[in-house]
Image 1 (cartoon, rainbow, N blue to C red):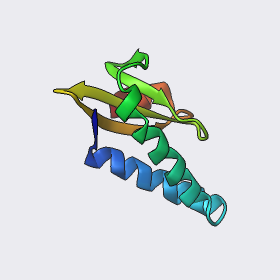
Image 2: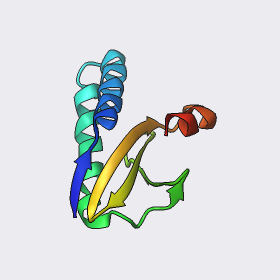
Image 3: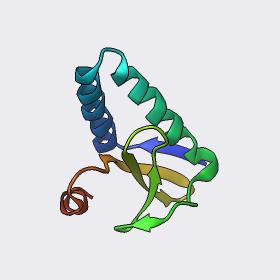
Image 4: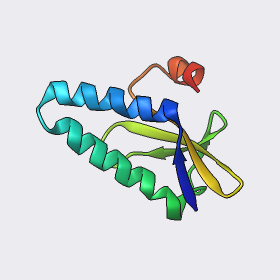
Length: 95
């Protein structure tokens, strides 16, 4: 399967990068490397994750983030990459 990361999901990654980079130099890069690895795994494993709020939800391996996506015409479309520590009401509104 092909993976497409939508603009709003890319903006979520940039927000996460800035947050972690403020915590420690280089941590933002590690965050991005880790999340991109998780996203690329959707080429093989897209569609096997539980559905939450109408989207498949992949939980990131190393950070408390979730990747929300749908599959349309054989393409995995990543809609949002959100911090799981956020208020669930905020997550639902964001989606």
